[in-house]
Image (tube, rainbow, N blue to C red):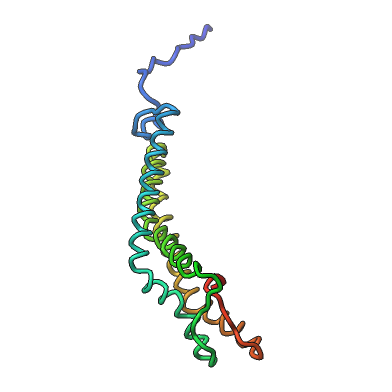
Length: 176
């Protein structure tokens, strides 16, 4: 008995199933660098815009950020004003607050730019996991900040200021 081996029928030279899911064109290394540069410049511009907005509202932002300390100092009978040791300290404080606030304001746009850079290289099944991750981590980040501002920070300040009740606290704006 002779056995005949048949070759499988030829397949069309189409793309592989996983390659099909990429959806986008192939880019050279330099094109990737140009794309990255454009995304970074847009992100930096958004930080500058956010910093400018926060600098405009600097007094309100400072009042909000200093409230846990001033309320704790007042509740313990201490003066509720912060001090500074250098004439440039208040200006530096406002710049730092504005920059951190600008980064915070610009973060959704920055994350969107990161997504636009990364997403063309992901498969469809990988893209499904991104949105639940982003929503969950953003929500937990905000809840963590709220918990720190409302609970942890005031409790820690009260403990530390009561611990050394025999001393007069002179808290500098640089140290706060």
